[in-house]
Length: 472
Image (cartoon, rainbow, N blue to C red; front, side, top):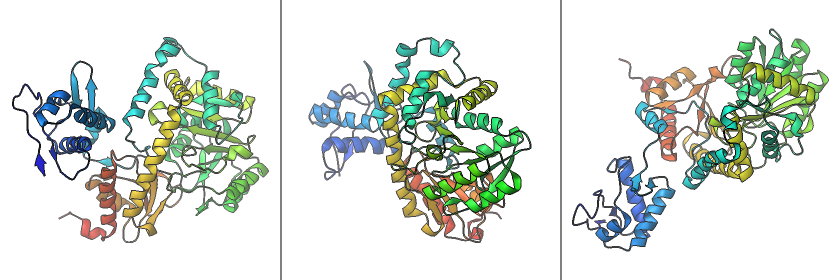
C-alpha cells in the first residue's frame, strides 16, 4: 500500500483529499474510484463535501488528467458523486429517505419493495421523463381534471405495457386506476355487497383484507398446497357459501411466492365459470418473470378483472394500475366506482407512466429490477436455510417457515431488537397463522446491507429463543 503525494498548497487542492491506493488494485482510475467509495463509507469524506478539481488533483498526484477524469466519471456512474455546473464535483448528498433510514437504524424488510438498482444513467433518464411532461402536457396536467378511467392515450400505453402477457386487449376494456389498491377497492365494491362473500387464498394480501373489512364483505380463505389454491377446496366453498368472486395473485403469490401452474389456473377458471363466480386477478408481480404463465384473463376474458399494478415492476410512487375488465358495461360500473372513491388516477403520474412506457424507460427499469432481484435472491439462498425457505429466483420476497421452538412473534421481536423488521404470518392469514414470516429483499439499501440483515436472521434461527433473550 502507498499514498500518492498530496498537493503542496491548499489552493492546489480545495478539498484536502488524497486516495490511498493498493499497487495491485488494477487500473489507476478504478483504484481512485474505489478509494473514494471507501472514504465515503468510512465517513472520511462527508456527504456533500466538495472534491478537488480534476486538474488540481491530477497535478497533486502527479498523474495524467484523463485518469482523474475517468475516475470521477466512474464515481458518478456509481452514484457516489455529482457534478454541479460551474461549481465543481461533490460527494452525493444522501436523500432524505436514506438519511431517515440510517437515523432509525432499522432495515425494514416488512415492506415488499422493488430492489434499488445501481444505475445512475437510468435514474437520470427517469427524472428526465418527468421534466419532459411540461412540453407535452403543459398546465393541463396540473390544472385540469380527467375522466375517471384515464385518457385514451394513457389507456393505450397500458395496453402496450400489458401486451407481452395480454396481447390484443381493446383499449375500451382498460381503465387507469389510482394504484392497485384503488382498482381492487373499485372492483370488490361492484362485485359484492356488504355481507356477501369473496374467496381468497388462505394466506393473502393484507391490503385486500383491509378493503374487504372497509366494505363489510366477508372473506373466505381457500386452502392451498405447493401449487397454490386447491381446486377441490375452492369448489367446496363455491357450493357451500356461493361467493361472488375469487381474489387471487396467481404469479409470485404474496406471501408464499407460489406461482400457479397452467393446469391449476385452468381448473380454477372452470370451477368459477360453472358456479358463476367472477375472478379478481392481482397481477402485481406478473411482469417480473422472464417467462411467465398466461394470466387468468388470457383464457377467461369474460370472467376476469385483471389488475396490473406498476408498484412492484416499475415504481411504487407512481400509484398507477391498469385494470382490464370483461366488457364496456363493467368498464362503466368500475369507472363510476373510481369516481366515487378517488375521483381519478393522478394525471401527472399517469402521464409519466405513459412517457416511460413509450420511450422505453419502463422496460429498462423492469430489466434493472429483474437483474437486482436475481442477485438478491442468490444472496438469500446462500445465507438462509433452504429447508425453511420458500422463494422464487425472479421475485423479491421470501417466505421463511420457522422451526420449533421459534414462534413468529418471538422471532420478529428478536429480529427487530437487532435492527431488522419482518412481518409475521398473522398479517396474511384468514385461518390459523403458520409459524412463518415474510422478508422483503428489496428494502435493504444495498446488497451488503441485505447480506448483513439476512445473516442476523440466519444466526438467530441457528439458536434457541432462550439463548437470544436479554431479559434479566
